[in-house]
Structures are given as C-alpha cells and as structure tokens.
Image 1: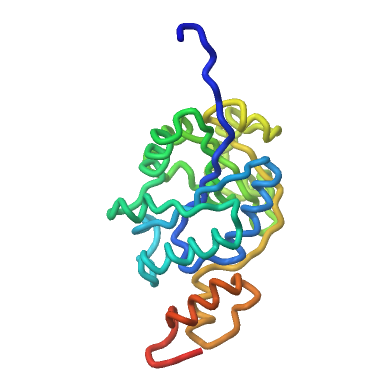
Image 2 (image 1 turned 60 degrees about the vertical axis):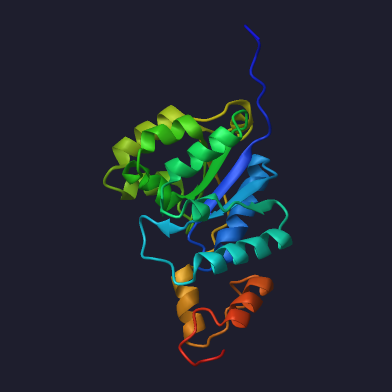
Length: 231
C-alpha cells in the first residue's frame, strides 16, 4: 500500500562456521550475546567448504548432524543446511542473500568474533553485507574494540566503519533491517576446533569443551581419531 510503513519482524540470528566440531567456545558466547541483544532464534549454519580455511576434517553430513544434535539441546538454535546444500564454496554474501530473500521483513543479525570484524574488509563483497544484515560482535580473549583498534595496522579504516555503523542499544537491531554493528560484552571462552581435534586424536578428554551429546556422537562415529584407535 502506498505510504504504508514496512512491518519489521523479530530479528533472526545467524551463526555460521565450519563447526569441525562445534564446541562450547562457539556456543556459550553466542548464547550470551543473543540474550544481550534479545534475539530468540538463531540459524546454525555449517559451511560446506570454507573459503578462508583448509577443508573440514569431518564430512558435511557429520558436521550437519552435530549441528542438529546441538539444536535439540539448545532450542534457540535451528539447523540451517543451505550452505551445505549449495554444494560449492561458501561466501557469507550467498548465505545472507538467500536468507534475506526468504525473510524479507526480518532483520538478520550475523554473529562474528572480534577477529572477524578486524578482517571484515577482506570478506567477499563486504560492503554489500551491510545492506543485508546487522553484525553482532562477540568480544574474544578479553579484547575490547579499543584494544583491537590500537593493535591493528588498518585500525583507521575500522574506526571509520565503527563511527558510521556502531550502535550501543541492541534494540536498534530490532528497528531496522540491516546496516548496524553492535558489540556484545561477552565472556571469553578460548578454545579452537583444531585444538579439540588434536586432543581427540591424542586420546585426551574433551568433556570440558564439548556438549556431552556432541562428544557421544564423535565417539560413536570415531571422528578425529587416529586410524585404528578408539578413545
């Protein structure tokens, strides 16, 4: 209708990654940031082939299965297989474009870490991302944005981006469809998937770092273990 105001629906969070395997260092900061930003639904999106990392160790099927298991344990998440179903190298712009077409009146809130924010200018078609989503930044390793800016060579470009797009009120993410950056003061939990894979290969306990359901799946399918070795 001419002159009518576009109805904006509740935001949808998006959390993507290789998830090889998904672990508590992924999960807990996102849950904390979602609570701060008052987001109650998050698409958990495993990559098919990451464009910025080595190929995944576990198959797409196993990584998607682990995502589904996690979603059963944490209902705020739902498994979104579109990246895996695309069956080609994954770019965030592709994922966001598909979700934007699927949910045209929904603010898309893309969860990233401080490290990803610093490298945002290296992302494929990065400027258009702000036409499709907001970014929620989970601070890592006790770094705040000022510390990151002071330690990075391209801090001037990032300073300008933050001046243009950073918001301090998370409700701003609910009131427009895209374009903002919100920095969530989350509790750091420093562990990497590569470290967990190495621990599993060496037969070390990973119970501290994995939901028990994910650990059980890994043991059942003998993922990340040396040939012939059962942990």
